[in-house]
Image 1: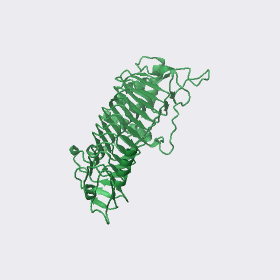
Image 2: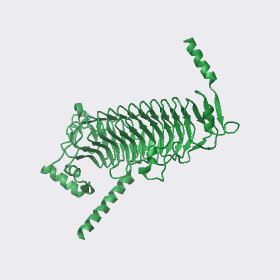
Image 3: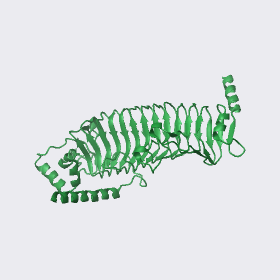
Length: 443
């Protein structure tokens, strides 16, 4: 043990610092070439038009936000050595062709740390490829807002990359905030994803966790696809309305995952399940969405318990005969539109809650009918169905609805707001479409 301690001390003493700028190396590349394993390269403020390849375990640290500019060719910084740290730099100007996956920082070795950088104007921001145990933390990653979404890369891209930590980054104006491909056991925490296609896009991965992230103002918050064993906890999905199919959380071909303690607020669709089985949605707030839950008949054995459904235009839309358990183990959910009563005062309604009326059930297979939602037409059909149940309806019911909210999720008044403007705009849009259809029918 004493010998090991002496060796570690000797290595620490031997580590050197190489400076770039006045009085030091003229280029960052020259400093990296001179650095030995364990050394630190400190870059002074300025603009350095060069592409870097790091092939030794060193620290690359900026002072005063030096700008490393790649000239729109290839990767700006390519990491090929393990145990590299990159901190305090502005990294910009990667190549543009999608086939090259050109990145601000591309990591091809394990245990990298990319911390506290500004990574802007790149095709991909940080790309972790075939590596593990990296930390990507506290970076501002901003893509190319002038480009169409389809020709942008991801802010953080993982391919065959495992056990990494993605924490406290702000990611915007890329295609997907974080894209996961065949990458397992990663942790995504406390990030903000906005102005994107999807905040997270997740394909063929298992056992990842997403906690306390904010997904806002995009086409979709999190698209979780072809996977199992995901934990999705304490996130906020807010104002995702970029299109008629926008959503907070999409589970597609997803199995045995847990979504709990999340807030789905003012999205076109709060939660969307397609061919997903055995998932648990527990203790979430689902509020002021056009549709709280969209459920395809291909999704089986999903459980909803202790969720609060508040102020949604529709609680549930189904495509085909849905099959979900809204009262697992006898514990239901809270619905702001519940009209039952609680005689014994135990906080649970004595009358079961039907999640769909006849009109809402018909919308699932006839989307154009949605323009009449909450109109006299829908009210009349629902009233008729209650008196003369001749129209086929869904049998989705909560048999023990709570009279008061139970999720424990509290809105942040500054961010998780009710989007009255989008809802009003949608209502005006419905009226305009109805007028257009009427005029077309007269010609």
